[in-house]
Length: 380
Ligand code: B12
Ligand code: SF4
Ligand code: SF4
Image (tube, rainbow, N blue to C red; front, top):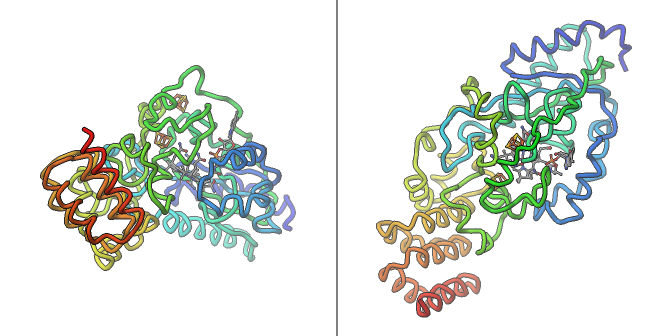
């Protein structure tokens, strides 16, 4: 451990360097017990993590920020704005450009090298951007970056909440900033009321299993039928509970980080155009189009599944031929949601195609979906 005196005066310079690298906020926290870990454990116990098994797996380490990378004692915590002023669309703003993990890791690694350069010696340290078992919002609040909004996002009074959080853990005794103590939500509850799937059982608690962000990105299997209509035209992620927040309406900033600019495949595309393109893509096209993109996380089959749901909600009968073609998709998960979409549109052509498909379909879930569509339509 390097003594405090040796690191004196570094705090201001390291923050200035972080701003120079393009970060929008920077603060310092000393590592230790995460104050909100009891909330996290209660959240897990209530089943709100759904299938995100990496969360319970490393729960013990999330209790204390000294555990994930032993031997470090301070964190430089940063925020990077991802452009809340961009128009809303079928893909959440954070995911339109290059993967933020790569963008922020490169910047934080360079900050680490800068610290070593300043001190003229190697300093043990590691960059984290949702890449390890750390309660990042807890750490960021401790470093003075903002408060926990009722929509669970960390909000800053000068930036709103459209930013990523990252941390550089260091074996240095840095003087911490004051934690952000105020709660600036007051009596507002716009985010809670705006959520289309009622994913907030109470303020500051999110049931992921109902959240569109989880359903479109993290969930590997079928989207529960009772939530499909509420997903509207969203294909990847959801910004609704942030869009309605008065702090974002007032303080969202323009995107300044070039690597986060929307790539051509996603730029200014309406949900219908994008959904049709995604549904028609094969694995090779998908890999080429989305290399280094956050969308890779959902895989082609996840995005095709989401696209089918979006087309089912858009209900344009011109999309029936594309959907009928997708009834031949190699992935049963995709065929199942395509069957649902054809049921939503309800055109004769689509229903006939479903009847034909029922004759050759071997997957039980897909057959179940087709039968359910046919039965519902016969009763209607
Ligand atoms: C799992 C996860 C998800 C899950 C669950 C989200 C959730 N709210 O729990 C899903 C897939 C749904 C998700 C969605 C999104 N995510 Co996410 N996600 C994470 C991840 C990996 C872990 C979060 C976690 O631990 N959740 C468990 C709950 C219990 O923790 P929490 O929500 O953070 O809540 C804390 C506080 O609110 C507080 N708390 C809880 N209850 C109470 C009650 C009271 C009274 C008080 C005072 C405090 C309090 O304690 C909790 C623990 O510290 C983090 C990265 C990380 N390693 O932290 C990113 C992270 C939270 N996600 C992020 C983003 C950008 C998103 C999306 C905006 C993406 C999108 N557009 O689709 C949405 C936002 C949805 C939302 N309203 O939160 C950013 C958030 C940045 C910010 N400004 O807050 C993070 C930090 C990633 C990053 N490095 O930038 N995400
Ligand atoms: S991200 Fe969307 S679905 Fe999830 S809680 Fe916010 S508004 Fe609800
Ligand atoms: S919409 Fe209102 S309640 Fe929700 S996070 Fe913003 S200020 Fe807080």
